Length: 281
Image (tube, rainbow, N blue to C red; front, side, top):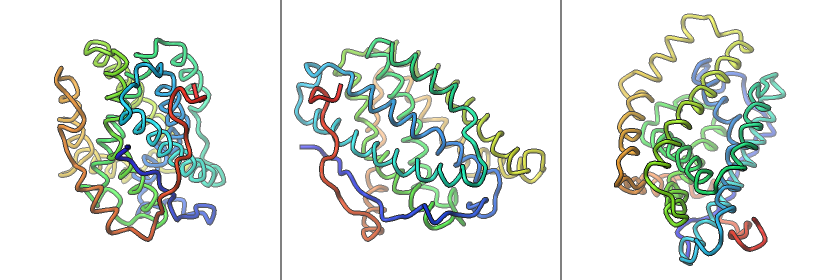
């Protein structure tokens, strides 16, 4: 029995949203937009990496069920961010790095399955830590367009719920400490460089790249009292420990609070994705 729930969010992004939908703040808006642009291709990579694990390695029925619902949740996120990104494209914001990232993903698909899952673990760690920040520090999204606030907080809840699935699959697949840490260091450098570049491309298109207030906002967001940099620092160090497991930081209460407060914004849906080994590899 899986502990995860696949949900459909009651939001329609086809209605559009303003160019600076996050409190008219160019930097914060374009940073979150840059993240959204990378999500559909990244989430498909996560799905494919877990589906590539031989079924014999997923003999624990509970883990196999969680993989199935991980796939369902990630597919839902992918669909929402495709809609989101379509609106960005209508505003003229292009995913400049799309071809380069797609080539990289094709190279990753040729790696040993343990390395593929290790990369997924690394990136899932970042999405989980950022999700914790979104739920823990409401000021990160203060002043956001209501529809996008809902998308980001819902996504954060489900990233929190399934943050250990890839990690548990990695261990079940025979992955070890050195491989996990080396891929984490590599993925960290590549991921944040991509996000920085795409944010800069977005800001240039927005006409805000060289405005002092843009970079004042960036400094506050990253290094302010509850800044992203401080929020990331300890979890990144913890990931390097041999004994690390994502649920050593148990923040399920944050997700439960959001779900209870937003019960009319979503509905549970049926199992939409097959488990690995069930015709999905």
